Length: 470
Image 1 (tube, rainbow, N blue to C red):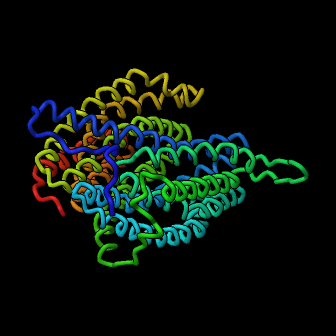
Image 2: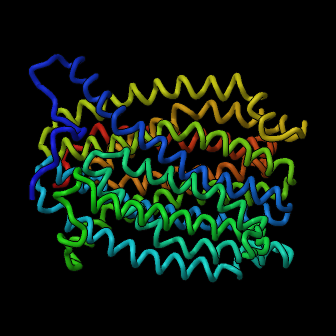
Image 3: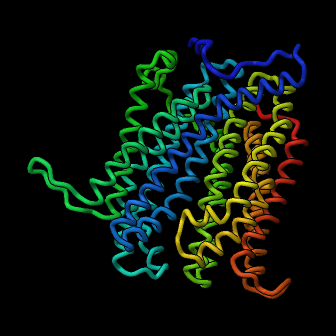
């Protein structure tokens, strides 16, 4: 198999240059890799935002059904996509080591994992009605939520196929590829949502309005179109002429599947733990009333948008570090890992003032309810405070993923989120064991402590980590 042409990103550094020049060279590489990742992440978020907004214009129950359905499939999806994310550092490492013959076999093992994951996820999604009943929703909202999940499940194989193939394209350094196809999915989803939610009649063909359930069908179709288009592109693109999915077919090899799962399962579980923690916080806050829950959701959404930049930086770090480790340039990998702390702090110094000084304006963008705005603005102050810790932890954990070190970081995040954040947040919010109960700010204060602990432990782990896995 011939290597990719020289127009590919990810180049090895010149060690004859000064430390400063090499550092800026690495940051440039991160920008090349990370900018398309940022757009791709925003495009993925756009589908959920569009679904929720357009369902809300259909009816309040459609909005509730889609919102609840989304909150259920997102943590499950992140577990499986997180597991598949192991393909990126593995393939990037093979490319750095110029082990071209190992790239397509690894891709195929990832596709087998995606196939099994699709079946498991579909089985979970179509059988969530007992969970919906536990939420004590009215029958109509329950029916909409389950109908939305049933429809969404048809697109799960396409969505996981996209993420498995992302391991190939991102691992080879071409992060713009998946950006384009996630954008295609988001663009197609918008008109399809309108047609399925509100119905249409054209040339004697009539589609009855489906309300929120139509969002699921629209998203599924958009995902399949994007996945099939990506397969067509990979088959015809000159950039991938050395990599043929069909011609380089590889049978399942348990040892290789196990190697992927060994790296990927801790990533998937870590992502599930983090997202499910925020879902648990929302459930704990429910007794405080709809106003408090609404404010919490507003702040969570604003924080999530700001988080896309450091998250994209982190994903680029995983690719770059694994490439350098594969190329056995451990000095450069260490330089990049440590200098990334400066980049993280720089981003935090931008995000924190935006959230702090813009808190009233941000809250007003989401709601005209004065009481909700007041609580949201209060929570945004706490969200601004934990920006440094949050950005450092996501930077460090992604550096460690580049070294394929995922088990210990998973345990660190589990301790920080479920061992510190949730218990401490519950006590500060509802109990008088430490101070008088403070309500919703209690959980967000606990997040500051938990994320700070995670940032410190992950940074120590990064500095002490000496032996990359080959």
